[in-house]
Figure 1 (cartoon, rainbow, N blue to C red):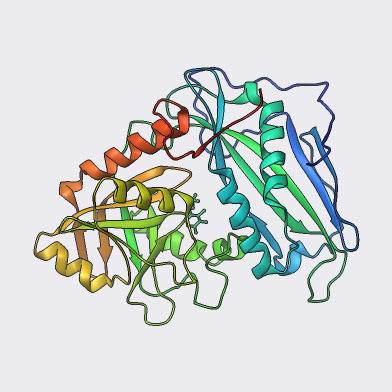
Figure 2: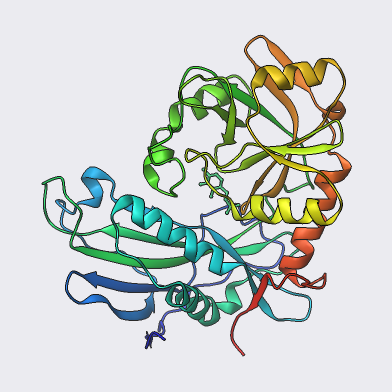
Length: 357
Ligand SMILES: *Cc1c(COP(=O)(O)O)cnc(C)c1O
């Protein structure tokens, strides 16, 4: 158990009004969690402080070689007034697999969950309650040694900041257009594709811009070697329903192991679908589209939960999926996962964690 010191702000900010458009990641709450790591001492001084700017040496290692990691999860206010997290232990475990890859020290799973719960509890009045809204939680770790040599840092900061966020799609689940990128790649096996770290995003911006310029909202990456097999979308994993089966790329080391992906697979199996985790080539999708068996396509991730895909562009082909409309499986997954997250549906799998008393 962490012994967390709490210093409350004396100048609380105005909270967004009900009905106000929140967007994503633009508004921050009154408090943040902070904990230091020092080699030889371990993680120490866990505390909750007023939200504030931090001061680091311009030589701090994170600015130069990108030794950092982040996580993303949400807190929801249920109709019963309780505050819930969704599978936070999974974020804690993924933190440690990211940390191992980036030579950042391990953070005990229970300490991660306690830190997140504690700061959410302090700022629980910031959790919006309009339909589709939530409190986005961003835990992250940065390397803070003042040193320009290339080596793992000996000191780190672990912080958790909170941002009230709006419904991802203001007017309901709107299918998006996705660009299958065949020039740039995001990750290769043996690299850092499975780790949740800024470097993967820095490498993705150019293709994201290219897709936007062409009128598509996100990039679907192909494998880094053959540029043939589907990997994942910008910040989402990808699923297809082909001839009645649910198909998603297997976790091959260059794909981020999404928690929404894992929950989706479990639910689909419960509902009697055959779920295949395997290689899927872009050619196979074109073929399925031509013979009418590409029934649905959707992305899975914490931000949008389920994001139906209405249009997929691959080279000179544009595939329209399910007439550009949301499919029944996508809708059912969205309703079920968000229902469990917000406390509307029973939590048969023990995925929901209540915050505070
Ligand atoms: C975070 C993330 C996802 C989705 O993971 P969830 O745990 O479902 O939110 C997928 N792909 C990438 C690259 C990500 O960073």
